Image (cartoon, rainbow, N blue to C red; front, top):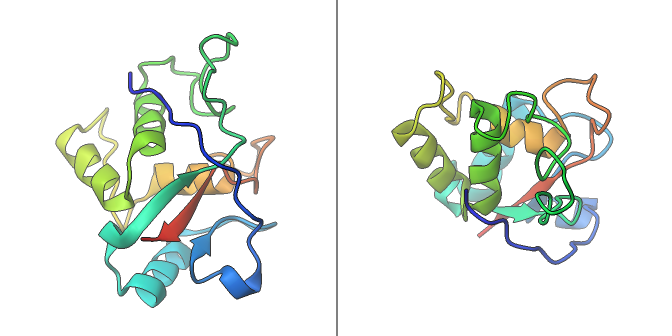
Length: 145
């Protein structure tokens, strides 16, 4: 499994820097809002969207006896499709690289794309559904490269 890099804390997202940084702030992000942001800020070029891992990601989760670096997506075990996708996204430089990796390594039918960015949305939204205890708390931000 790829090791997670520690990230530097980032400033909270405000209206003035929303073009350069994208994250969930008190409301969930949808596929439509994510695609609109990518289209508006990088002309739809996903290779110009970098993944910024937030301090809430536990980089030493194995030594702490946790299921994974974030508190969701690991009920299928460390080798489940969601776990592998999440772990890969956390160590990938751009969203385009992650989507290419996902296409080359389909896991149980899970393939990430601009039309189906499930893992990207989960880490942006703090879970896969509103029932997640960490809903609307981003574990990643997206930034313009």
